Image 1: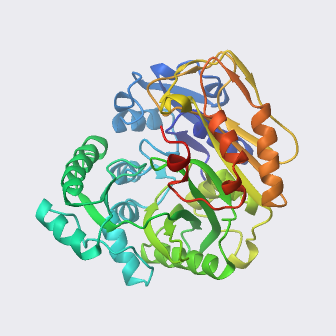
Image 2 (image 1 turned 45 degrees about the vertical axis):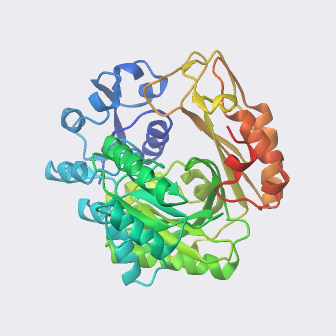
Length: 447
């Protein structure tokens, strides 16, 4: 049994894990940087240790300090949350070499699915559709140009490692491709320490749909259906929902079955997400797999009734999944809006500072996952997310109405937030009719 867990993260996801642990009767050890000293959620942990200065590279990403805190805290496991060390196979390997369970997949599985080229090859082997693209990393501009002419423009340049839209560029012609490759390689090297990129045919006006999976150590793999994450800006998600609108039952089943095949092929355990794009024709293609819990996991929790953080901990403890595929159902509709400390009127510029007033919405089917409070200082050092507003209602129409009401009640002063852009999205006829794709926001509200 896991009796004590270190949470190697901060903010909203750290609080989410703390709450799940407390409900399971598991003790917790938190870590924090100097920037987060005094954060209210730290008081819920049994112990808390400072691991460095505000910069993530000197604190939350310092593997030796996190491991030292785990050893001092006498924990049996580490939950990495999302971001930071969550998809670092080396960190997972070190945890287990120190006889500390890493709450996530094995280092081998993480390395396999984390390499987008290897993941694409694996997808092809198990008959999962993939976008036409290079077989591996592109070594030169000449090779990139040759491939681009084979696929036809536009093409997408993507970093082999990492995610979050970094190291990603679209090229419409030869000249743009040369410049985009150099930019993508430089950005990928700076963000992930790996400048490798590969090429894909760019599918125009796609929807972004991902499938949540959970797998135990006894050969059981279950999908928890899909989330539509098409409402994005520069590959950063703003709004997520489940079930995916305009997704017919046949495509949903094919996509979810494909996700399960991939998980089995990778010998993957714990929670993960298989990401697809869906073309206007209805055809879907695998793009990548995220070997961690994701920001938008509450959407899945609301429609399935399954607590994914608790499920992660139980799987890491060696327990079997307590449900089979036929036991999992989608009930109602859920929508999540990410509330960030950013100014949509100024190109989504981050707006760190002190929250002077905070009024949180409530009511039937409303959930606000956040660690902030009045007086909380939004740090300039980390992601600008303040919280996640989630609603769950019997139908999508009712969920949209509920979210509009909840957004009108959510009141934050002291910092600019993304609430206004969410209100515009929820008011737009195209969103109501689900006539949107991953370029909708940039086309509708260019900045």
